[in-house]
Length: 194
Image 1 (cartoon, rainbow, N blue to C red):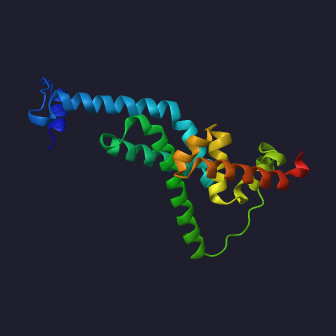
Image 2 (image 1 turned 90 degrees about the vertical axis):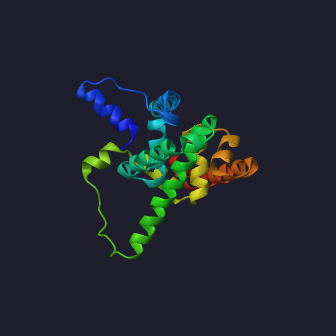
Image 3 (image 1 turned 180 degrees about the vertical axis):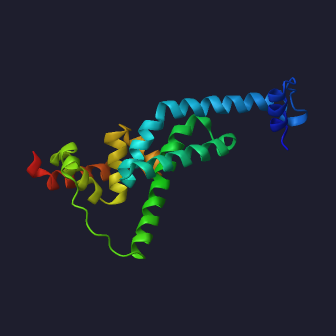
């Protein structure tokens, strides 16, 4: 049983908690508290934005929340090995990577399952989302994955081309060119909405 568990049991039983002996003493407890505080602050500040990013990628709120939760759990496990100053960039990159994995698993599942009956949607759902917004969303979803990622990071999260390049592991000029091409494609597809 870990020394942390023993300490918690003593606290519940009314015994004074003792700092574990050896390398897991007060210094380790302080580092763990610092990690918890830093990750908690990242969670408070960026959870919603990361979920929105994932929703734009996987087009499903429940899956998006799962992706972001898994990424935060991974960050917690890897905290000691990461450059803490780059934690937000790690989170964004990991959300994109996990979203890609979700999409790959869906594609494979679709290959091995019968085609679903198309759902026309309810009148209430149609009233909630106006047609223009739905058309823009469909146009963005039709873009190639890399182009969609760049545009989402650029215009939804308001990242610079340099930050996009760092997040996706591409050059800044590639991020700039991909964004430009994506905007041109969307402009052509959505010219009737103007």
